[in-house]
Image (cartoon, rainbow, N blue to C red):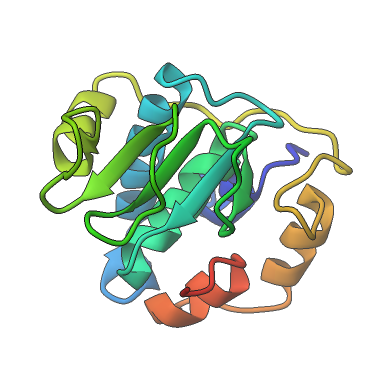
Length: 176
């Protein structure tokens, strides 16, 4: 068994023949897997690796789900706090924490000094090199509060399809 939250939620369903079944809102397992793997490829390119923190704070529930699953896919640690140790901030233009030496992947018109990265452009690039699910130890951190095994257990106690706000909450990406 692979210990990875993204794999447990998405890849397992696709392999089991449920690729076209809805998982969140009107998105299928296959579509959410494609989007999160593409963003994970981008995050990996920006230096996110197992154990590296990523601030996940998009305003949109579905964007938050994609960002959390992308981070989990490559073994990054999901946090919603403005963590100076985080390598990347994924959020919404105008409401994401300041960069302070980190990359910011933003949905909407990037602001700042031009160092912000546009989510839509990066996702197109990420589709050319999507990230596979990293094999993690069960005790590896998923978030600042839960291990990978604990997060998989939380998700296993629920059944899709979800609405985006519910899955966002289950993935511990609360609105700020």
